[in-house]
Image (cartoon, rainbow, N blue to C red):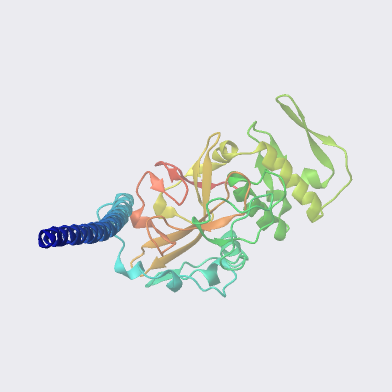
Amino acid sequence: MLSIERGVGMIDRGKAISTLLIIVLIVISISGCTKEKNTSSDKLNVNEEQIITDANEEGVKEENQQKNEELDYDETTTKDVDKQESTNSQGEDSLDDDHMGQEASFINSSGNTVETRIRTPEGYSRIEVTDNSFGDYLRNFDLKEDGSPVLLYDGREKGNQSAHIAVLDMRLSNKDLQQCADSVIRMYAEYYYANKQYDKINFHFVSGFLCEYEKWQKGYRVKVEGNTVSWQKTKGYDDSYEAFEKYLDTVFSYASTLSLDKESSKIDITDLQIGDIFLKGGSPGHVVMVVDICENELGDKAFLLAQGFMPAQEFHVLNNPSSESDPWYYVNEVKYPFRTSEYSFDEGSLKKLEY
């Protein structure tokens, strides 16, 4: 009986041990799965982050590639448009090789006049002008330092600084008066004043009134009453430059491209001379002046243009929008509408002033 009880006890202990072992194995198994799941979860998180990162990087690459493609397209389109505009402005033929080149080949930065600053194209020479003539005066007019911006009457820089190649060192009042037509008037007035040819300093107002500088010298001043303009003596004789500038301010106040149009006559471009103008009379209109001319052995001519503009600003030599580097305009390439850096002129706009 005792043996049977011992056997049963041993069986019970065996069951207990077996049960304990099973429990331990279950705990170990559960612990191992939990760790494996956690590890798998970590891997899943890492993989998700990697996928997101890769997707972002791929998106950036695609975006950059798209931008590059758009940039290439824009650059190509811009070049094509520029090329097309150049072709349209010049006709089917492009600029001849003999007057193509880098901007540096046309600019002598140490030169301080139109003649010494701006070189002629290869094979061209400046036309002869009479000493002390208006053409000689324009060609040798002082320029501001190379690279100078165009300033407005109030000292601010003009918004568009890409239209000019040089700025003339000409006085500009602090009033919004000396605009496009006024700049042309001033060039003639300054020339005649410097040569003491006071009797030639006469300019019409839009109304038709002739404002004579010699009367201004004698103390007469302009009196405007409605549409009536007359002289009234209010001062003594004064031929000072200060009085001359006040005279010009008065002219600028009442003259415009409309009055300039009445003081000029149409010419053919084959008769082009320094001082001639491209003019559109109007409110507003516009005018640019030929400030130099060169010619090759075949008689082909090229010319430089200068302008003032609105608001009142410094007189400046223009670039040629049909060329990236060459500021000269070629007579045999002029087509209408004739396009300059900031304006286009219709046929019949080339004129000679009768000053």
